[in-house]
Length: 252
Ligand code: CA
Image (cartoon, rainbow, N blue to C red; front, side, top):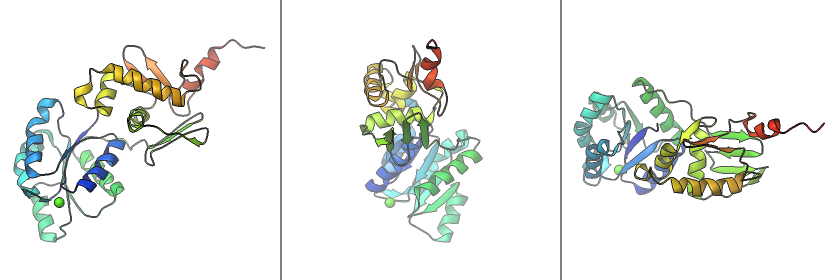
């Protein structure tokens, strides 16, 4: 199950950058640009089946100070141990200490690298007992190479162009390579929780991906169907992709 991050940040560009980086890592991101939006998400996200697992909180927001959210977030933190990481340009030591005393788990001063943020998030989640496996960034199986960090997909050394939706679908399968991912999980991850019934989206996009990635889209060896359950990407570097060969009668 994907972890849900509440990202409170009014800088549109930074919010977009962080959202993409977090989504590539497999997090589901709920973005808020103000104190009011964040309050609404905190109040309504659980009812929509999206319980928040971690909060990234900017302080300078257009309608107030991010610190105002510490109180509404307190219940989440008490009941479910949700970590909170402050992301702010304010560097004053006393301010940092105060926020940490008020219950923030960590504090990152802007500008920060995405790698550093992801590492701090993993640490904060680990302290709360949520183990986050080191993210899968690269997948190689036969001629197919996928690099989630660089958003690069290549087949036989040649770069492939995927649409953003195709890429998100493939990224979700890469993160679970070798394991079955259910229709529901794929739809929620790629399209959003409100689309879990739209299995025809999956059939359509899986068809497009197979047309681009499989030598013979009618006999897929990478993007495998688990009938009635979901899809599975052949384990990296395994023999899954050659099962069909193994089953073929020997010619000699
Ligand atoms: Ca700000």
